[in-house]
Image (cartoon, rainbow, N blue to C red; front, side, top):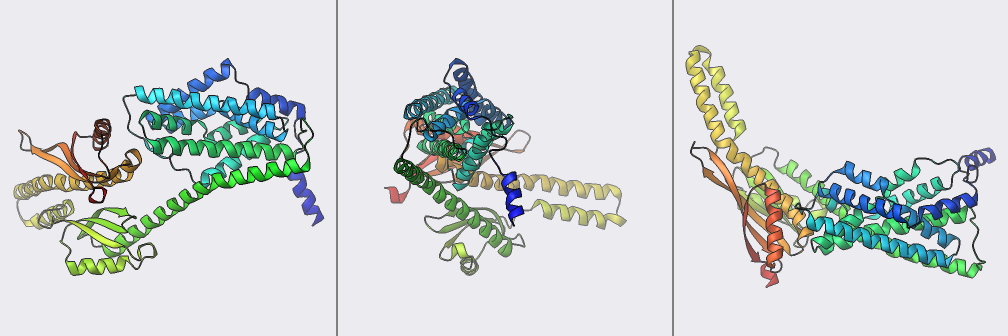
Length: 457
């Protein structure tokens, strides 16, 4: 047992290859310097990250994180706390505040001027930090300060810069400022605060562990008070992220159970589920069906089956039906074509080809409408998921593509008509922003009618 402890102590010994304390101090002081070069690099990194977020390019965002100098100031703050240098802590804190304000404002300028104001998935991903972001910040911060205190420099710091992602949340906050979206602004700043605090905290812990000397003598009472305050602040920061993690886990479990429910009760594909929407506030599941019409008795039975799932014990089922039982599906036409071809064995080849031509025309006539309906339902489901983040007043949407016949008697889709329900009236600027966003999502000109939800009146 003693041998095992000795081996473990040797493996995890942070003193073995530790750089001299003077060199560690010099490195951290150098990284936290606010000078012309660092500021130029910071501004360039802001623009690069903003463009990456705007264009939904992960590679560009990673590049911005690698060149950003933000981590140096945060580690300086932790160093000042570990050495009880109040003047240095104050100086580092002011530097960090200045860099944060500069980053957010620069990003806001970019997004104000950018012609693309649609929220990408990269932007949306930084609005609801969870406990996993806290863990990433803790482990990343530990790796960063351990790497910074070694004799030989390694590639730890670039990796930590990517993992903790300090730059993208600030640019997302800039997007929220430019688009007047509080959810983006405060959600992203909260993520940045999580990353900054836990990088600073882990820097403080590791530097205390390697016994970095204090600038002035500090009593045990002062140290205990500092430890208590840091612990309290850490708990207060973690609590909202734990709630968001709970919400995320619950949503994932609900979606998994809905998919299992659909697979169990709609296996035959007639009727077929083309979209579903969860409304937790009303405890309601909306299913959009096509095919055979579901009777009231069948709907009641389906609702009972839904309530056997743990997350839907007291939920209601609402079915939106689109009776396409009289239309021809692509699969049906294809099967019919194959049957006719096989049956044409004794007939002339010309007749078989003529029959095939007729059935192919039938398939081409009905299949696009069926496919368009499916595409519309997927689009509406996507809008219902994204719109509440961008437009807090958004409550719901229904709609469909507008079909016309061109000169060649072909069905073409020239626009999208939608009825949008809101919790409150939208001003002209909000309506214009909503119009622009819907056009980008639908990839068609969108015409919409706004109505206020009854409970909001």
